[in-house]
Image (tube, rainbow, N blue to C red):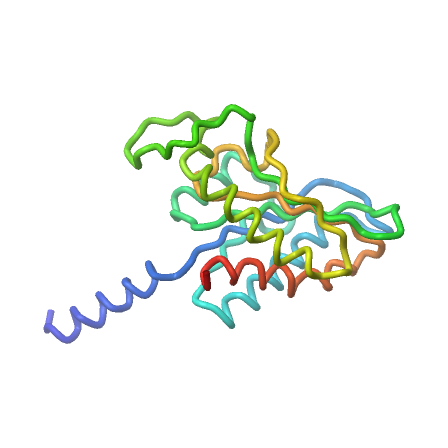
Length: 204
């Protein structure tokens, strides 16, 4: 192969690897909203976030599921790990009953995590995969919170580490963002805040 072609191919793949990769996992839970199910809203929101992030930033977004096709959280974690994702977000909505909508940021933790990072070739179990990036996960959770709390449409609580089933097995910093909605389409006001929070991680 001519040298110029080799250089072009190498540049192409280096650009792919340079992209910040986000895995978006829209919850498929059958939660009832005002007049529809939350799993439809989470999918629409994830698709919109993907479109905006990929248009504006050097970010590649992978959505874990397709509408109507069942899968498991374990398979989603495997997708994220295989793609060597930089960030994993499980997006969840619920029907808000309070006057002020509430938002929550969770990361997976049992409360007894080892804060020393494991080596890349160290053995880890499915349940302990989160330890690989635990320190970064805690730091990024605060960065995400600092962005989201500026938006007055929703009152976001400080990030909390809890046993969180949708995030088990993920090696990358992983978060569950859960937001209360008054109406079925209220998710649209959170697209910009979530995109801004994600972009801030690569800018900083």
